[in-house]
Length: 193
Image 1: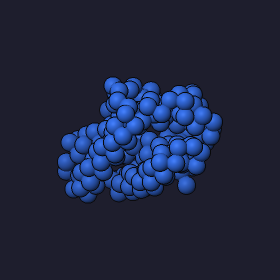
Image 2 (image 1 turned 135 degrees about the horizontal axis):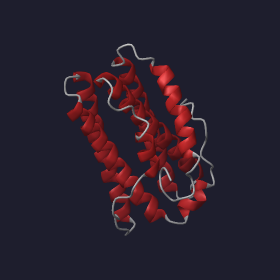
Image 3 (image 1 turned 90 degrees about the horizontal axis):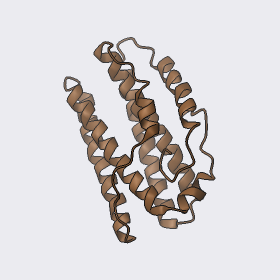
Image 4 (image 1 turned 90 degrees about the vertical axis):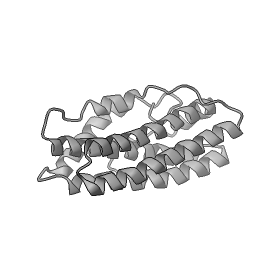
């Protein structure tokens, strides 16, 4: 569905299962960053009503996910740790064209967001199918579905606001670049690491 070039090794689950508090903290902060990204798009592009409406809804949903992850952390007598640096996301962010016309940067930001949602969805699928913890397996399955919807939304918006940009070509460039980035990760108990 996502055409990701490099699938996640299911053995990542073994690493995650060794440190459930860490994956939960990292996941919570990923949800917060997703909400912040949606708000940032709203602030940067207020003239696009469809985008603003979609991002306001998305920000609320991502904050609800943050709250749900935090609730799982509390139920397990863990503690939400400090925000984690997400090197994967930072490397992808560097691929966004800067200094171009607004609509070009917007399309890249939407494709960047779609890429993160696609990889998160794929990771949640791997976790939902392989983790021994039944509660987390069900939770990750639910979030996998949600992330797939977010991925689709961002691609739809990129096409809507493309103003002549070949979105499919640029998406392919993102896929190729992401493959070089994700190849460095998959050995830590984090969503993208």
